[in-house]
Picture: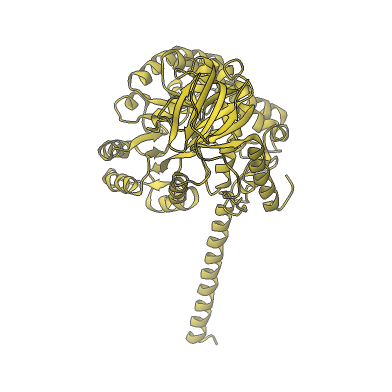
Length: 503
Ligand SMILES: [Zn+2]
């Protein structure tokens, strides 16, 4: 006969087993999440590289004019860690300055990627520098990122950082905790919670409040109010609960992707399909000028992230070929590989890829759909250009297929192919985002930050020349091509060492 004592013992044992299983599951999920964020990739010793410091002059170089439209030949640029000191054709150089021969080369302001995700991958900071990206805007910032920002300001090798908060969204109690844990969302459940959340972000030192797609309408307005009181700019997605007509009444100063407008117009249209794609594109073309004019009037900045959208059809249906074309060895291997919980970049486990179960017709339909989606972006980009909207080049780096640093050069090419002039594309990656970061950067003039890129060829002739990097000045220190190669090799080697399977 089963006694009460025995039943109690079994119940306790079962409970213990359940609790242990729960704890093991939580630890396992947590391990996979941090692995996917890149935290398990070894770190490159960022103190081990040699940059030229102290007063330095780049002589006899073509310099991008302050308006960004022409190259001015025969100039010498003198700078130090405090910024650009002087520019001129016949500069008297003080005793003992470092001299870099710039003859036959082109000097542009350091590039800025207006939309990146560092996640837990600080090696990316080095990859940015090696690509001439001397400024980044982190669009889902956390305490680590604020720490790296402070370290860089104190001299660590890395780009100047602007850090927006993690996304604010509205979820129920349980879903909110789950979203916080698995996707780093900040849950603002009710309008009355907005003020405390925004105040604490301001206190932590964030540069902006980032809006997510799932913020509810009432809470959007409460966050809007709280952000304007705290002095933090309000940037990010246009929540699905907020129609475009409401955006114009808000303080939101920036949209994180052209995609936000494409999606809002898709909702207005009634959600396009391949069958009415031409009508949808006509609709976008008809609405684009009015929307762009409104964005310009309200001074709402727009981050492009065009190349990522253009890559989707290829990532969907030609993943292996796509992966061959990107600089995969410099991306964090944790993100690239993915985990059983999160898809990465590689064929067979790519976040965008169409599964093997799909037939040819389904694949073709998906490619056609996403090709139209990208075309809608290009129509909008041209309207933004024509209406004088502040466009910022941003890549959404570390989203599947988007390698930090390298992807900004891809973005510049996409912007130019879609209709911006090389000068307009360069401005979108220099002066415009610098202004939005409240930074005296993004142009080569005395008193501006000494962040510059020395190129072998003229990017105003061909935007691809932003890749022909001969040297980078970051925070007043010059790194020559040999050092940049050392940095890139160190990152690639470290990633390789962190991989458990070959790419
Ligand atoms: Zn993003």
